Image (cartoon, rainbow, N blue to C red; front, side, top):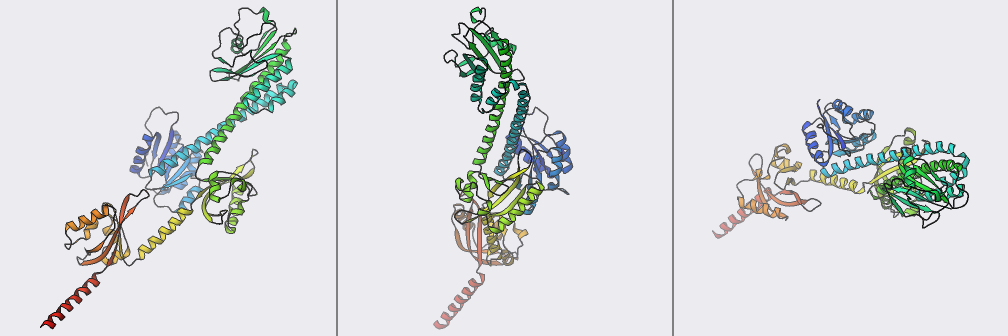
Length: 582
């Protein structure tokens, strides 16, 4: 089978790369034409082999896979694609599969599934969820890696700071960027007996004053770049401390960031990262007779280095916290329920949607055991599901998870459950995404009951779209008319019209229906053999959720025999009257 790759060109930084795998080349091409204008980079493959070949040089992030691929299964392709691209998300497409096939696909690692023909809203919503999941995972991995690297650097720096371990411990307890900076300056002053000083940290294109030992001597901000030749410029340009033993002897140097120091000594430490980028600058001033010494400079350099590492680590931690907060904010705003359990089954975290599903306020749900809000049968079944997850590490999907709300009512959930691991890689609990399918299940059951009733109805029932094209007939229609379903599906309902009604009759009927009204009356149709049949007919419009008419249903009771009997009765009465007159 052939495969079609995206046209060569420059890939945008934020490109969303998508692989369509479908043996229907026209469908794949049409889908590509829909997706590319929305900013997706799309490649096509028309077989499992073609998909694997395409993936070797097209780094797809998401794959749309038809469950049926010629003679192979799209579900079997999931594992093969992940061998090439472990992070790829697979969304299955099917026009035939039931819920069992969908569950199998999810068990095999599919992220979601879509039914053909594809609904544009569902398609784009699913793709956005895919790329949002990839983005969040990528951000979290990057933040965790940043934190890991920063912690590793901090451990290496700790070896160099054994002589000032008490100061190091004091800094380590600070968790906020500004708090670390303020405490760093205090530690400097304490270790070097400084009378005054200031700490500036970089924020964009400015150095912002974080803390001052003697307020009023330092401005709130200093613009970058610094003035050439200034004290701060010398320290930051050289990446080394600058020490001035006696400010009175200072000449040919521009002041920067400090004012009012007319005597005494000055010590300035640059705060930089490993790449030499400016983190901040710290200055100390002493008016006492004793000037700063080389030992002060060396000790301060060690503490400055440690302080820089601490500030970077703090910023990394804050970035991770912000990422986690963003992740939690997303969880709080999705309509699906999300919750986490410990190994005993107690709720440790949940979003507002989960509270709404169960009907409990958050303060009651926290710490509650899952068995308290499920039926006994569901609790036992869930015990087995969780045991299997612990044993295999693989996530599980359950589609008939019945829960008990606080008010005693029940809801049916579709749940995806996976294992939570702690920092040591050991199981610490479970995370679950729950979708309330109660109404969907009821609607499906109601549709099934309605379909069964229509199929077994004695009346002839026909459904046509708003253009009059027939889409459905029931068995009673076939029995009465002599037509099979195959002979009438896709045909216009006027095919049954005879000469009994003029065109004006049908025009009036159609106008009434187009206005959204129900039409009732008697109508004569022609059977397949040409014989007329008279029906007592009711035609009603069918509307979608927006109130738009999409089709019509016609319920027809065969009254041919009744009409014939009435004619015979009238004829008999007429003959009797004639006999009486004669």
